[in-house]
Every structure is written in structure tokens, then in C-alpha cells.
Amino acid sequence: MRRFGEVAMRVFKSLAGIERDQPASAFVIAFYGMLFLVAMSLVVAWVTGTPLECAAGGVC
Image (cartoon, rainbow, N blue to C red; front, side):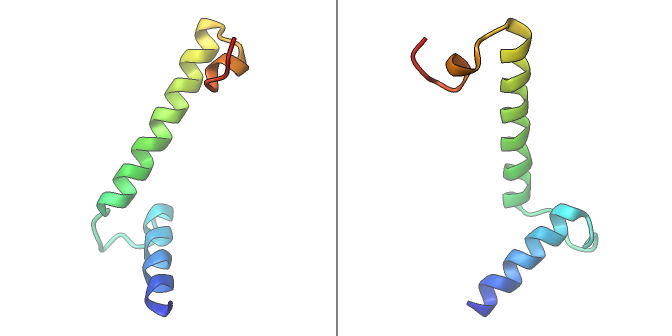
């Protein structure tokens, strides 16, 4: 459990930009990619005027 906490702390520090000596891991790159895709899908739904219920995958 202690090792998991250390790894999680390293990931959060790299996300915050505190540890610059280690390169970004694949998890960090995938996390930022996922956030970008979610943000872009919300922007596209907003621009096209899609109702929120339909944008979330509900029945329209």
C-alpha cells in the first residue's frame, strides 16, 4: 500500500508540474488526452446546440 501511495504521489506531482526531472509517463499523457477529448466533445455539443441530455448519451 505504501508503494501505491508513492506512485500516486509521483503521478500527482508530475500532473502539477512539480517534478520536472522525470519525463511524463504514459498514464499522464493518456489522462490529458482523455480530458482533451471530453472538453472537445462538450465544445462541439455546445456549438451545435445539442441538448445536454442528448450529449450525455441519453434518449432524445
